[in-house]
Image (cartoon, rainbow, N blue to C red; front, side, top):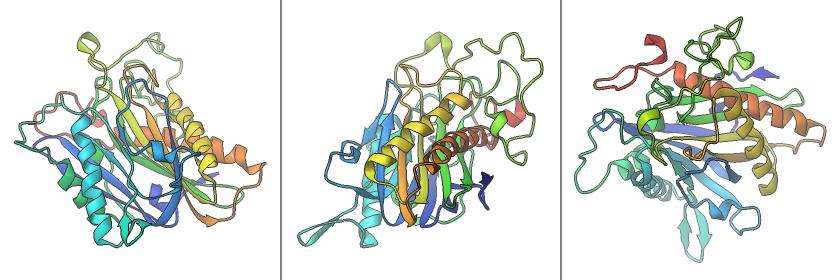
Length: 332
């Protein structure tokens, strides 16, 4: 298993990603745009999720494909990003055909970035609908990581969070990629060090090349968490997409999303808490043949390791901005 050529989710054939951010409000939207409808499902493991149109992705439900997936800041206000993304997709002639109408299928998830030093006095309506539209229109094969898009206002335990991505190639053929907005309650680093928990999976020093500390520090098992003295339910979330070009059914996409959640646990301590809204969408573009049963082990393992790498990259690539309440990893 090796890394993809650009180390981005867009190494998966048929996918593009766009970011749009509001620097004043410290919030933003990231949209994964599928070149053609793609099979998708999702899985939630956090206790405080926020999402749009995820029930239709259950394997037993009718709609089997999506046109795009959005990740947004703004807490519940950010759900408006789906309307903006849908508007852009409709202009492009995309959507599920119903009689003479097309309805773009754009599910998504939100994270809480309302207490991060940004000005949330945005007037009558939040900016996320327009950001969703802009993100679709900006979609391409390359995009910025760190403090951009859905990662613009993200925070983790004592550090700025961010938007991360990574990719890898399956030994049996095919590509897998991860896209993640990291706003976790937990710590991506080992204790008070700068060493990432995801270090065993790092490729080519993509997030600093520090490896794991040796010996492990005494505080490695300590729970260094965001806003420990004033934590409130719903203020944390890691939201993500795991995508592949191998052909999967809707039920198999859900299984892939479940496997990718292991990447959260490999990169964040703790993960999947009652106060996180951890959710992963899984997308299959179907450009390559379906995996043989023996290849499923590799696919699930690579989903986990690629997601862990993407999480660390999101933290590593964060950049400083005015009124930040936490430092960036590079400045800590």
